[in-house]
Image (cartoon, helix red, strand yellow):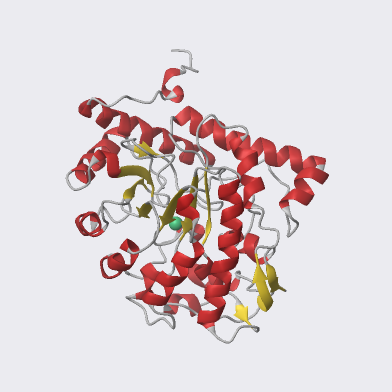
Amino acid sequence: MLKATKDKSLVTTITGSLPRPHWYTDSLAGRSLSNVFFGDFKFHEQYQDAVSCCIADQCSAGLDIYTDGDMRFDMDLGGRAWFGYIYDRMSGIEDSALRSLPFGGSPREEQPGDIFNEIMVTRLPPRVTGPVGPGALEYDLAWKIAQHVSPKPVKFGACSAQVVDMLVVNEYYKDRIETIMALSEAKNQAYHSLADAGCPVIQIEEPCLHFVEDIEWEVSAEVYTEAFNLEVEGLRDKTEVWCHTCWGNPYAQNLGYGAKYKPVLPYLEQLAVDVVTFEMKYADYLELDEVAAAIGGDKKIAIGVISHRTLQVETPEEVAADIRKALRVIDPERLILSTDCGFGRQGISRKHAFYKMVSLVRGTNIVRRELGLEEVPVLAEQANLGYL
Ligand SMILES: [Zn+2]
């Protein structure tokens, strides 16, 4: 159900991750969040302060929906913690190690010396050795820590069960499909704990299905659609549910291999979610019309108007022009403005992320003004910290 974005036009947010502050040097290193947050003073302080910094930056930028910046993730290689947090905590999964995985959709993954190769070989995939369960995912605790210091709704996102399946070595279930369904059910339990704790937006990140049509995959789009809907089953009765899609984040790389949204839009439309997000800025709004035509009125559409791959900060005028483009085909009450993906841990700096968030809201305010909608104050543009 719509909750955080209900009856709101041109809502602004980011996808999820923010660059870690340099002084946040501690890591969970496989331990459960509750164990360390409540038992280790140094970690407790660093984690709480890091989350608070993320919230403060988003507050200063004037965003409508915040995230905790994914501060639970360790300083990893190639964004591994997005999966690794789950590998280390779900029951039935163990023994992350250097082992071979089938390479995916590009010869670049097999070529030593290519950044795609490093992304693959640093995955350290674990084995599935027993029935999987939510274990110590503790999404509810992570969300509560952030919401506790936030004056606005905090969206909580995590990578989908089908992405976890893609990168584990199954030694327990009959086949891939059985593994995907079991992982989806287990993650569904974790999301229900999160919804029951009061989380106003739950975001499932990157179903594999939007990559399926251009690459020969072992699992069909139909199975991925069914698995995704199992992963979110019952959640919409309790809270707002989003599905995030993009073409890659590790080291800020585009891993889309030329894949397009168009062939899988009918499947994305079948997902039991309130909002679907689309990477748009980096590809200069290619497929905007197709997306708008395919996603039905029961869902809102979030588009990336800020790139997580480029260092140049988009100007507010550029953001406003892009929003006007989107408004040609999407009504303001159904349009959400976001980033193409999270800002990540080895992509851009905190400064870049901050000023990009500010531009996102300043640009949206230009359009709000034109449409007679209420503007959201941007604290960052009101504070003159200089000498002029
Ligand atoms: Zn993404």
